[in-house]
Length: 241
Image (cartoon, rainbow, N blue to C red; front, side):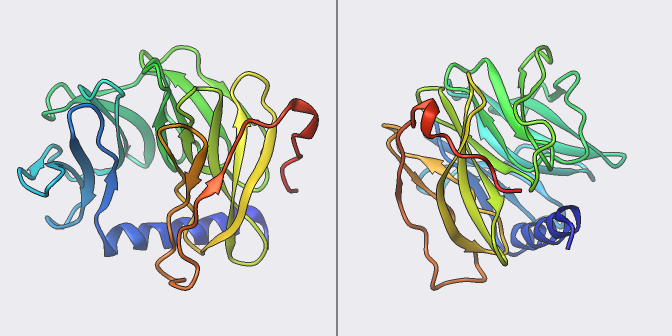
């Protein structure tokens, strides 16, 4: 099976995951949680307090709004929006006001977003590769052009030196890899944690550990912490072909 076909199947499963459950972005300095819900018969973005109170809808349209991520300051949310069949990255204030597209961010697919720790850049999956772009739309860079198989669900490390991401592995399972933001070295962190639905890695505050999300289709393969340290260049491994 070609990887493009395999990824289409994986993304369809991920879409089903969105439909089946609300998905959440970790809170930042303001202590609030951003999440996607289908409760109003369309994928919309909401926020709430950490105790579940104060649930507020931020987007209200017939478009597809997904993958909200908080700016490190807590004042801005980046998210992906599909309009006329094209995906792009959007920004809005934490109260849903001032929604605006990031210039030059159009892509065929945005399979996950993540802010750099300094809040200056956004990393995203275009469905195949991991790219970065500044919040003003400048400096768009493909970190891994021609990547095969596809890389999805990026997560920027707290020190800014690496971006973790998910990549389909053998059979129907996914692996977690990392890429150095300065040298482009790709190395494997963990493997075979999630069935069908790609992993969504999340860093510990110290940057020493990662925890991948558990696939709903595989309750026996729960999320397991994976210790991670930046490997020297000489030990970086090639991504699978």
